[in-house]
Length: 268
View 1 (cartoon, rainbow, N blue to C red):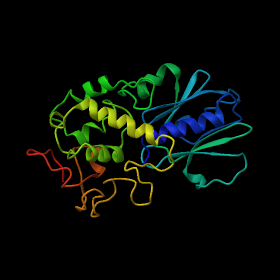
View 2: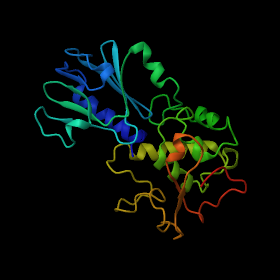
View 3: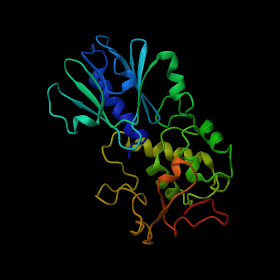
View 4: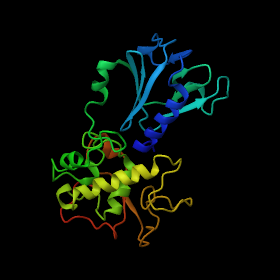
């Protein structure tokens, strides 16, 4: 599941492959940008911003978002791809490397001045130089009645948390995801833990929140519906929370370690 740590790591891989070398390949397989040719300009920078990637080339920026299924992969020129060609949405390459974006949820080419339209709404980035835990906590506290499991997914509050981290954070803080923000305790402690989790995982190919890297034991509750909680053995539950697109993503919790609030939000 792509989250802030995945995108941070991807930015590093693209930076190593592309920055500083003139582009020899620019193939954007999105109708609106199919005629855009960024060659032979060099890639200046590759940045991550929450779950967004910004590839700066001259005065323009390629903005991509992985969404649920997207991935960037780097190959040597002529190497066989690990995914089918029909999934490729953008190719950027130089004499040494070819970066291919597969099944990306968003692909657009902007001017540098337009970057704000893509990422200006985001809250403090957990893995970015702008990380400000006090501002993130203040953003969370702006709506104390909002379920914590909904608020954590709001990238305007803080950028980088996805479905897996919101489930694991709620478990580690002992709060049911439907608990109102105003009832989950000290918000700075939540921000500190969120930051520590993403920093710990940003260089790992497999995300671990339990400290146990063995298969099937890397997460406390995420993806474990109907299986025993790794702490107490109670069967983990899952359900929808909130409204809109985010409600389609299942949230996971242990009913013993995370007792439901007295007046829960809509969690089914």
